[in-house]
Amino acid sequence: MSDEVMSGQARGDATLAAIEQVYRRDLERFLRVAAALLGDRDAARDAVQEGFAHAVARRDTYSGRGPLEAWVWRVVVNRARNYRRDRGAPTAPLERELVDVAATNGARETGALRAALAALPERQRLVVFLHYFADLDYPTIAGALDIRQGTVAATLNAARTNLRRALEQEVPQQ
Image (cartoon, rainbow, N blue to C red; front, side):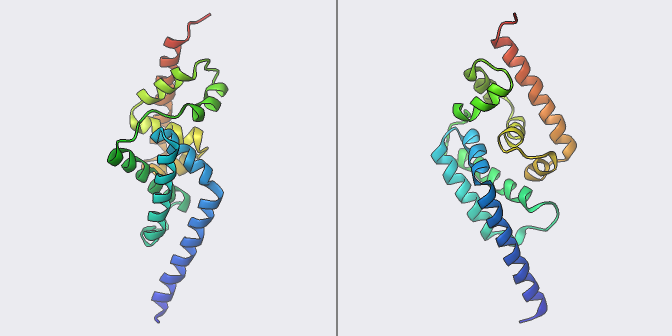
């Protein structure tokens, strides 16, 4: 076997081990984000499993540029989006996933927050989910969505503005 083939095989084994580590460490975060995106925990579990299976099968396409975690997030988020599109899964985020976010942001009505999140444009909703549900930093979100860090910041800012406006309309000022 040539050194180049061995090197490629060793790199593939290392990538597989790293993907497994991300899976073991972050499965609950992936499930939480997918559930919020899909509105269905069973569909989320299926989408995340499909995403990780795809990442393992296609690990040779990971270029090594940027963090592996961001690449895995991109694969899994794309699988969840495809799952929603292909199966007609609901797009409303799950209420239970929103309770903690609502409480920390002072929202009294989780339904209002859920409606405001559902009304966001998809990119804004994804950035909010990845930042608040998965607790990802800007570079990882940028890698997951294949956008620039500045775009992450601007998108998150626009989403917060839209959410604030929507929630202010729902909650009377005292």
